[in-house]
Image: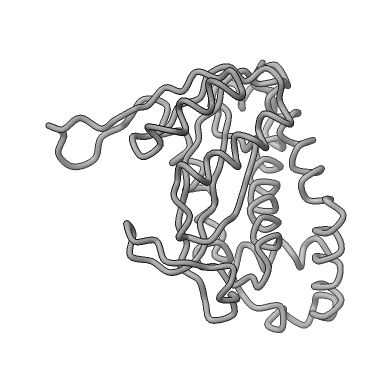
Length: 232
């Protein structure tokens, strides 16, 4: 059953297109939806993240995070009420707002319509982050989060927000301090074709596929011997 769900995530196929060697598509989807409702994917993800942080000699309780958002084009299957138009990216779909640790491991996730401003989505992510981790003291963001979010984060959660801006003189690609970490996480997600475009009728199912993609990524890393992983 897990192999079938992972196959859908990695290959980006429809449930009905599962090869004959897997259980019936309806059964696979039923278990996927049930495990999503029960929070199973998030619990597995968090357990693997804590193991990997330990492997990297990091405390299970993070003290810093990086927040960013990624807009994904929606298919016609996505309900109108849960998608929107991102005027900046000129894309209609959904937006996934992530908070990751300094290794790029996911700490908090919120999926919204793409029309939601990054700073407004960041408030929701920050609320989820603050509810789960009590020692977050420093968060890096890009220039789009400046303003009310910076003030609110300090007043409500006691967090210092460090806005990392791209130099006005920079041309072409520029590796930005800390921000490259979350960009790499987005790259990990885009290796899973189910997340390249949004096919989910429910935002919670989109969140589930984000967790599934990172479960697959972290389990592969944990399968590498510890001595090799530390030097990689």
